[in-house]
Structure formats: structure tokens, C-alpha cells
Length: 114
Image (cartoon, rainbow, N blue to C red; front, side):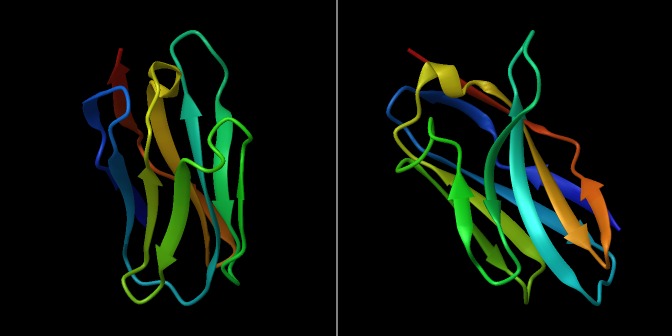
């Protein structure tokens, strides 16, 4: 199984982006999924998570602006990012539990200009 993250890009402050995380290969069990981000020169930070039952959690800095969702039929996870701020600039990574094993996507760059 490989994860492919996409949807990043350059956006002005206040704009929106939707990140997608696709899993290739067949899976029998879909577990929790998360999005992390890593800004240049900083440690990787957890951003949002969704449980296998659909429960969601967010880091305080994005709560109310970001929304994580999943489509198990398509084996996809999404991160809708609204009201983006320059401090949201980072490489975003998806992390998923599939068939009791965790996988990381390759990262997608999000740049928010002021």
C-alpha cells in the first residue's frame, strides 16, 4: 500500500485548499487517519485526526478552520483548509492505519502568502 497526498499549492491568506490522500492497493481494514505538517526548520506537528468511527480532533490552531473527512468507499482522506494563514505554510503529510499497519504519504507543500 502506498499513500499519495495531493492538493497543495500557493494561496493567498484567507483562501482555501483541499488536500487529498489516496491509498493505492487493496485494503481490508481501514483505521484512523491523521494529517501532520512540518514547517521549514520546525518539527512535524499533528494537525487533525479522524477515527475509524468518524470522530474528529484538531490542534487548537486550526480548529474551526480545517475539516478532516474520509470516504472509505474510495479509500480517501481529505483535509479541507479554510481561512488559511501564512503560519499554515508547511509540507502536509497524511498518515493512515490500514490493515493494522501505519503508512505515511510523501507530503504536499502548502504555501500561504500574506
